[in-house]
Length: 92
Image 1 (tube, rainbow, N blue to C red):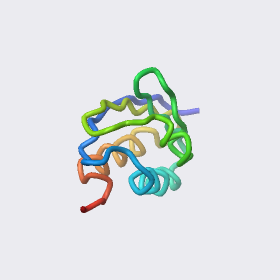
Image 2 (image 1 turned 60 degrees about the vertical axis):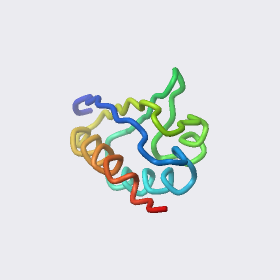
Image 3 (image 1 turned 30 degrees about the horizontal axis):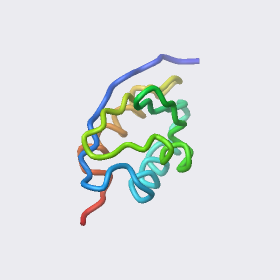
Image 4 (image 1 turned 120 degrees about the vertical axis):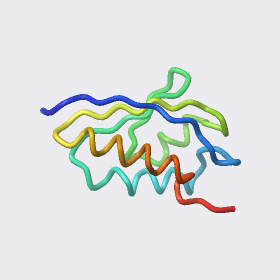
């Protein structure tokens, strides 16, 4: 099954976690075998689902916990954290 890895980040985007950042997250995690989930304010979202990510209603400043489980969980979480630091490749 692999290991379980957790980390967290704060949403930096001015407009929060909307469709474009959610799309970048899905693209980021699709190449990993680990299952990746986001948690925000008690709501859980599968990182491979744009709709579930949008349902987090994560605005700027929201803290997101990332949890991955699987053989490449550490790499998957590191990729998500790196993407979040780059504001999900969104430039306004």
